[in-house]
Each structure stands twice: as structure tokens, then as C-alpha cells.
Image (cartoon, rainbow, N blue to C red; front, top):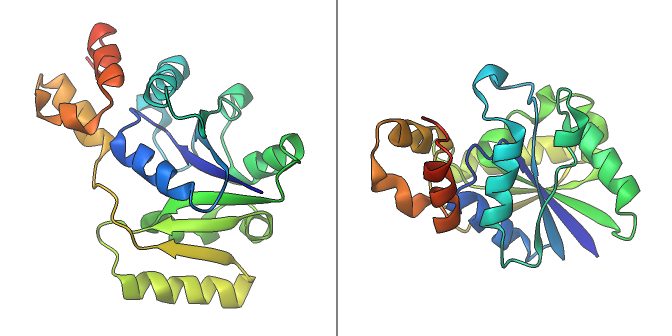
Length: 199
């Protein structure tokens, strides 16, 4: 029995996040969607407050019994590292015999910059989805290198995922452009407008 993890800032959570999580259920029993609090690779000053991002995620996952909003990283209140999350999940969810960590192809090319990345490869299987800007050949070559050099366990799922960007959504909401409404769960969109998020 395997447990999936999809980590992101979820600022805001959108339909491509949910699509990836649903696809991941083909490889594991449940998926934890974990908003990170202070990701080391992003400008933390511009990230929406934790409680709002977590509330939006809970709204988006309402009705999906195998997709679970987890505040495991938000509770840490320090810079979020995947290695720490993997260790904590392995400890707290010991009923599962493996972890499937869900990423986009862009992240595949950043893995060797992660904290204790060689240890990360030992603790999980990576499930990779295509992202714009990376050819399948590039992805396969990178996977082969990581498998050969670090004994990484990587699965490449070639199903297409909607190209939706949280930054495009935020910009459109600031400008009062409702053309991005389709990218969001209806409850999330209402929450954003009702609470003046991104204004």
C-alpha cells in the first residue's frame, strides 16, 4: 500500500493540481496535498498566508475521499525541505510501505539541488508529469541519469496535465479578469473573491 504526496505552494490550488493528484491515485491509495510554508526556491514575501492557502485546498478537495489536505509542512513554520516531510510521513503513516512523490518535469531537473537529495531518492518513488518546455527525450535522459547515478526510482506518466499557472491566476484576479474562472474549483473562486485574496 503506497501513499502519494503532492507538495506545492497552492497559491491558489487549481484544477491542474487536482488533475495530477487524481492521476497519482493510479499508483497509490491516497494522496496528501501538502502546502509548503517557506519553500527555499521561492520568494516567500509574496506568498499568501498559510491559513488562506490551506482553506482553499480544503475547499478544492471537498468530495474527494482519497485526496487529503495536509498541514504537515505548515505546522513546521520554518523553511520546508522535502527530506523532512518524507521522514515525518514515513514515521506518521507507517502503515504504508512506500511513498510516491508527485512532481512536474521542471522539478525533475532540480532534484540534485535539494537538501540531502541522495537520501530523498532512498525514501520515495518519484512520479513525473510533463511540463511545457521539456521534451520527452530530455525527461527520459534525465531519468536515466538519476537512475544510474543515484539508483532513483522514477515513473514518467505521459498523460497530459492542463498548463495552468497560479501566477497567471493571481494576476488576472488583481486585474478583475474573470476569464481564469474555469481554472479553479467554483468554491475556491468564490472564496478568493469573497475574502479579497490577491487584491
